[in-house]
Image (tube, helix red, strand yellow):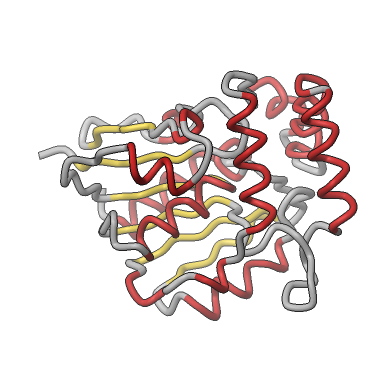
Length: 230
Protein backbone atom coordinates (compact mmCIF):
# COMPACT_ATOMS: atom_id res chain seq x y z
CA UNK A 1 0.00 0.00 0.00
CA UNK A 2 1.39 3.47 -0.87
CA UNK A 3 2.55 5.74 1.93
CA UNK A 4 0.42 8.87 2.29
CA UNK A 5 2.24 12.17 2.62
CA UNK A 6 0.51 15.40 3.66
CA UNK A 7 2.33 18.52 2.46
CA UNK A 8 2.00 22.01 3.91
CA UNK A 9 3.74 24.68 1.87
CA UNK A 10 5.18 27.99 3.06
CA UNK A 11 3.56 31.36 3.53
CA UNK A 12 2.26 32.83 0.25
CA UNK A 13 3.60 29.89 -1.77
CA UNK A 14 1.66 27.63 -4.11
CA UNK A 15 0.04 24.94 -1.99
CA UNK A 16 1.61 22.13 -4.06
CA UNK A 17 5.16 23.52 -3.92
CA UNK A 18 6.56 20.48 -2.09
CA UNK A 19 5.31 17.78 -4.43
CA UNK A 20 8.47 17.78 -6.54
CA UNK A 21 10.35 16.27 -3.60
CA UNK A 22 8.54 12.95 -3.92
CA UNK A 23 8.57 11.16 -7.23
CA UNK A 24 7.96 7.80 -5.70
CA UNK A 25 5.38 5.21 -6.66
CA UNK A 26 5.23 4.12 -3.03
CA UNK A 27 3.80 7.52 -2.03
CA UNK A 28 0.49 9.31 -2.42
CA UNK A 29 0.77 13.07 -2.05
CA UNK A 30 -1.88 15.35 -0.59
CA UNK A 31 -1.04 19.06 -0.74
CA UNK A 32 -3.21 20.83 1.83
CA UNK A 33 -4.38 24.32 0.82
CA UNK A 34 -4.69 25.99 4.22
CA UNK A 35 -4.71 29.44 2.56
CA UNK A 36 -8.37 28.86 1.69
CA UNK A 37 -9.00 29.72 5.35
CA UNK A 38 -8.07 32.83 7.32
CA UNK A 39 -6.76 31.26 10.53
CA UNK A 40 -5.58 28.02 12.06
CA UNK A 41 -8.83 27.73 14.00
CA UNK A 42 -10.98 28.11 10.87
CA UNK A 43 -8.78 25.69 8.96
CA UNK A 44 -9.12 23.02 11.64
CA UNK A 45 -12.85 23.58 11.99
CA UNK A 46 -13.59 23.37 8.26
CA UNK A 47 -10.97 21.07 6.75
CA UNK A 48 -12.12 17.51 7.34
CA UNK A 49 -9.35 14.93 7.28
CA UNK A 50 -11.96 12.14 7.52
CA UNK A 51 -9.83 10.15 9.95
CA UNK A 52 -7.21 9.93 7.21
CA UNK A 53 -3.80 9.72 8.87
CA UNK A 54 -0.58 10.30 6.89
CA UNK A 55 2.58 8.27 7.10
CA UNK A 56 4.58 11.49 6.71
CA UNK A 57 3.63 15.08 7.50
CA UNK A 58 5.92 17.61 5.84
CA UNK A 59 5.85 21.37 6.35
CA UNK A 60 7.91 24.24 5.01
CA UNK A 61 8.24 27.44 7.06
CA UNK A 62 4.70 28.45 8.17
CA UNK A 63 3.55 25.05 6.88
CA UNK A 64 5.94 23.42 9.34
CA UNK A 65 4.48 25.39 12.20
CA UNK A 66 0.97 24.37 11.15
CA UNK A 67 2.08 20.72 10.99
CA UNK A 68 3.46 20.99 14.53
CA UNK A 69 0.20 22.47 15.78
CA UNK A 70 -1.89 19.73 14.17
CA UNK A 71 0.20 17.06 15.89
CA UNK A 72 0.21 18.88 19.24
CA UNK A 73 -3.59 19.13 19.03
CA UNK A 74 -3.74 15.40 18.16
CA UNK A 75 -5.60 16.08 14.94
CA UNK A 76 -2.96 14.24 12.92
CA UNK A 77 -0.73 11.42 14.14
CA UNK A 78 1.90 10.81 11.46
CA UNK A 79 4.67 8.23 11.79
CA UNK A 80 7.21 10.84 10.74
CA UNK A 81 7.37 14.64 10.67
CA UNK A 82 9.59 16.54 8.23
CA UNK A 83 10.29 20.21 8.96
CA UNK A 84 11.83 22.61 6.44
CA UNK A 85 13.07 25.82 8.10
CA UNK A 86 10.07 26.31 10.41
CA UNK A 87 9.76 29.31 12.73
CA UNK A 88 9.73 28.48 16.42
CA UNK A 89 8.73 32.10 16.98
CA UNK A 90 8.76 34.56 14.11
CA UNK A 91 9.09 37.84 15.97
CA UNK A 92 11.91 38.60 18.34
CA UNK A 93 11.28 39.15 22.05
CA UNK A 94 13.00 38.46 25.37
CA UNK A 95 12.48 34.70 24.96
CA UNK A 96 13.69 34.40 21.36
CA UNK A 97 16.49 36.70 20.27
CA UNK A 98 16.97 35.02 16.87
CA UNK A 99 13.70 36.42 15.52
CA UNK A 100 12.54 39.23 13.29
CA UNK A 101 12.62 42.67 14.95
CA UNK A 102 9.06 43.84 15.67
CA UNK A 103 9.43 46.98 13.55
CA UNK A 104 10.63 44.93 10.58
CA UNK A 105 7.63 42.63 10.98
CA UNK A 106 5.25 45.58 11.08
CA UNK A 107 6.83 47.16 8.00
CA UNK A 108 6.57 43.91 6.03
CA UNK A 109 2.91 43.53 7.01
CA UNK A 110 2.10 47.06 5.85
CA UNK A 111 4.02 46.61 2.61
CA UNK A 112 2.19 43.39 1.82
CA UNK A 113 -1.18 44.97 2.60
CA UNK A 114 -0.46 47.89 0.25
CA UNK A 115 1.66 46.30 -2.50
CA UNK A 116 1.28 42.50 -2.34
CA UNK A 117 2.92 41.56 -5.63
CA UNK A 118 5.98 43.75 -5.13
CA UNK A 119 6.34 42.54 -1.54
CA UNK A 120 6.14 38.88 -2.58
CA UNK A 121 8.84 39.48 -5.17
CA UNK A 122 11.06 40.93 -2.45
CA UNK A 123 10.18 37.98 -0.23
CA UNK A 124 11.33 35.55 -2.93
CA UNK A 125 14.65 37.36 -3.20
CA UNK A 126 15.11 37.10 0.56
CA UNK A 127 14.18 33.41 0.49
CA UNK A 128 16.88 32.68 -2.06
CA UNK A 129 19.47 35.04 -0.57
CA UNK A 130 22.92 33.52 0.02
CA UNK A 131 21.86 30.18 -1.45
CA UNK A 132 24.25 28.39 -3.80
CA UNK A 133 21.35 27.95 -6.24
CA UNK A 134 19.85 31.41 -5.76
CA UNK A 135 19.18 32.12 -9.45
CA UNK A 136 17.60 28.74 -10.03
CA UNK A 137 15.59 29.06 -6.82
CA UNK A 138 14.08 32.35 -7.93
CA UNK A 139 12.71 30.56 -10.99
CA UNK A 140 11.12 27.86 -8.83
CA UNK A 141 9.69 29.90 -5.97
CA UNK A 142 6.06 30.06 -7.05
CA UNK A 143 4.44 32.73 -4.94
CA UNK A 144 0.67 32.88 -4.71
CA UNK A 145 -1.28 36.14 -4.76
CA UNK A 146 -4.50 34.14 -4.58
CA UNK A 147 -6.33 34.59 -1.28
CA UNK A 148 -4.37 37.75 -0.42
CA UNK A 149 -6.66 38.70 2.51
CA UNK A 150 -6.11 35.24 3.97
CA UNK A 151 -2.36 35.46 3.52
CA UNK A 152 -2.46 38.76 5.40
CA UNK A 153 -4.39 37.08 8.21
CA UNK A 154 -1.92 34.18 8.30
CA UNK A 155 0.93 36.68 8.46
CA UNK A 156 -0.66 38.27 11.50
CA UNK A 157 -1.10 34.84 13.08
CA UNK A 158 2.48 33.92 12.26
CA UNK A 159 3.68 37.04 14.05
CA UNK A 160 1.63 36.35 17.16
CA UNK A 161 2.22 32.62 17.58
CA UNK A 162 5.03 30.98 19.56
CA UNK A 163 5.87 27.29 19.71
CA UNK A 164 6.48 27.78 23.42
CA UNK A 165 2.70 27.31 23.62
CA UNK A 166 2.80 23.83 22.07
CA UNK A 167 2.62 20.43 23.70
CA UNK A 168 5.55 18.55 22.16
CA UNK A 169 4.83 15.25 23.89
CA UNK A 170 3.09 13.76 20.83
CA UNK A 171 5.82 14.47 18.29
CA UNK A 172 6.89 11.47 16.19
CA UNK A 173 10.32 10.89 14.67
CA UNK A 174 11.20 14.30 13.28
CA UNK A 175 13.60 15.17 10.48
CA UNK A 176 14.53 18.85 10.44
CA UNK A 177 16.40 20.72 7.67
CA UNK A 178 17.54 24.33 7.97
CA UNK A 179 19.81 26.41 5.75
CA UNK A 180 22.82 28.05 7.37
CA UNK A 181 22.20 31.24 5.41
CA UNK A 182 18.43 31.50 5.91
CA UNK A 183 17.52 35.21 5.80
CA UNK A 184 13.84 34.62 6.72
CA UNK A 185 14.04 32.26 9.73
CA UNK A 186 17.35 32.50 11.56
CA UNK A 187 18.95 29.10 11.99
CA UNK A 188 19.45 30.02 15.65
CA UNK A 189 15.80 29.04 16.18
CA UNK A 190 16.72 25.41 15.55
CA UNK A 191 18.03 25.04 19.09
CA UNK A 192 14.53 25.47 20.54
CA UNK A 193 13.20 22.56 18.50
CA UNK A 194 16.23 20.49 19.49
CA UNK A 195 15.44 21.15 23.14
CA UNK A 196 11.73 20.32 22.78
CA UNK A 197 11.69 17.27 20.44
CA UNK A 198 13.71 14.32 21.81
CA UNK A 199 13.62 12.20 18.63
CA UNK A 200 14.71 14.99 16.29
CA UNK A 201 17.31 14.50 13.55
CA UNK A 202 18.74 17.89 12.62
CA UNK A 203 20.47 18.64 9.32
CA UNK A 204 22.14 22.02 8.98
CA UNK A 205 22.58 22.74 5.29
CA UNK A 206 25.57 24.81 4.09
CA UNK A 207 25.19 27.46 1.38
CA UNK A 208 21.43 27.20 1.76
CA UNK A 209 18.76 29.87 2.18
CA UNK A 210 15.12 29.53 3.20
CA UNK A 211 14.15 26.70 0.82
CA UNK A 212 16.13 23.53 1.66
CA UNK A 213 13.97 21.46 -0.70
CA UNK A 214 15.12 23.59 -3.64
CA UNK A 215 18.73 23.79 -2.51
CA UNK A 216 19.44 20.05 -2.55
CA UNK A 217 16.32 17.95 -3.20
CA UNK A 218 18.32 14.76 -3.81
CA UNK A 219 19.90 14.99 -0.36
CA UNK A 220 16.57 15.71 1.33
CA UNK A 221 14.82 12.83 -0.38
CA UNK A 222 17.60 10.42 0.61
CA UNK A 223 17.55 11.49 4.28
CA UNK A 224 13.74 11.47 4.48
CA UNK A 225 13.64 7.99 2.96
CA UNK A 226 16.12 6.74 5.56
CA UNK A 227 14.36 8.13 8.60
CA UNK A 228 10.77 7.77 7.44
CA UNK A 229 11.10 4.39 5.75
CA UNK A 230 9.62 5.11 2.33
